[in-house]
Image 1: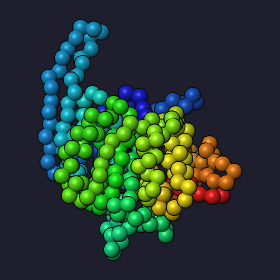
Image 2: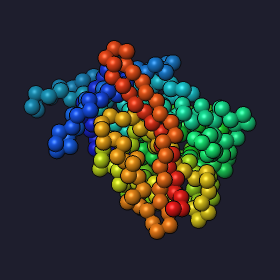
Image 3: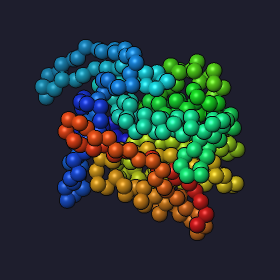
Image 4: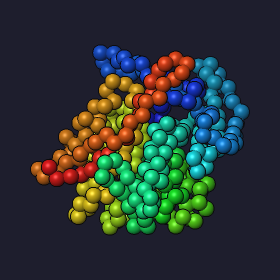
Length: 305
């Protein structure tokens, strides 16, 4: 995902939830403290941790910590993440599991499992003619979960620094997605820049489902993400009802809804625009401090006005 190498504000071990303080300074700087557990999740069934020794230097009396990795299982997927060091793309974000669970629930509720209900009367075919493209895939949980349940072509995209762990997680689950008849690949894709021709070639003839989770935590990402969504969703000359995106988000600050309310304004044409609709919401309340965690899933489609 397009992001600096450091996470937003306070990103440290704690209970597994994101918490939010709904305040901002006049200059728009973030005051919300974010807390996330990097070391254990309720869904872990097994876990292996690799820890390197810490090295201490005399430069500014600071301690430099060597990378710490852990291998764990979430849903049906084995993942490896970097607990200490690295970028935020190398950790599991809460909306990824939320989106994966939503997709599985909607797919399992369809009696013949040949399609997935993604809200209202919208159904997405789940077959070998289906392409799933995940933006800012990070560790790849959501896309890999679907690729191990039904045959599809899965394209996991992110920035270069995310590729090593993303490819490692593809390999960890290779047997499962191959047995299901899926094809999984990774691509570097930077939002806001022209999408590579080889990606367009892979999605041109297929039904397309775009996935993204926890991708609008900085305002600087709003326009680049919108432009990439517009490129991908408008790429088919035959507008199919099964060509759309599902975006999962966690509300942390008051301005978080701005992206979804304004989505489509920068990329609309005389005849078409991106249409965004909230199709699912969930509120979790922390029993200890009463803080709420609000998560939503939005459906986005390129449609005629």
